[in-house]
Amino acid sequence: MRVLLIGLGGFVGSVSRYWFGGLLQDMAPRSAFPVGTLAVNVIGCLAIGVLSELAEARGVFSPDTRAFLIVGLLGGFTTFSAFANETVSAIRDGSLSLALANVLMSVGACLLAVWAGRTLAHSIWS
Image 1 (cartoon, rainbow, N blue to C red):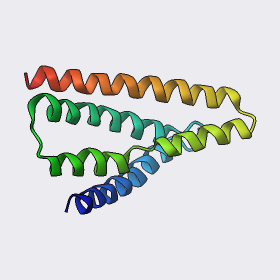
Image 2 (tube, rainbow, N blue to C red; image 1 turned 90 degrees about the horizontal axis):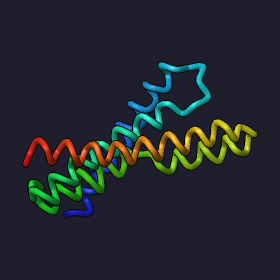
Image 3 (cartoon, rainbow, N blue to C red; image 1 turned 135 degrees about the vertical axis):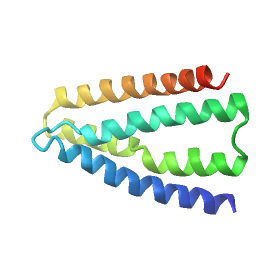
Image 4 (tube, rainbow, N blue to C red; image 1 turned 60 degrees about the horizontal axis):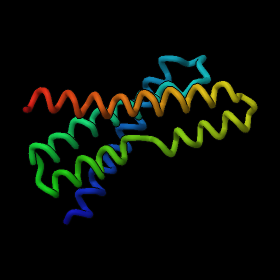
């Protein structure tokens, strides 16, 4: 049953990523920078920070709910593989500065978002 929950969460997360990331990228049509992917990664990292803190520190979720939300939904929603591919493509295309900016902003912002999510969840629910 847990595998089905993860699969369902992954479906919802992947479709949400496609829709939301595309929407944001369409808002910056002339930008070569992958704005949609960065935004999805940061939002996903913030969400995983909040949910992980609630699950670990407060025991809010059952193992099945945690599998659905964290492994399935957020695993399908976050796009680190797309981030890596876009970075390699930028390097391949000779845009080293774009690739470096993508790495620094994505990694830095996502680490900060996970920390912020955990801090937010801890402060609200402690």
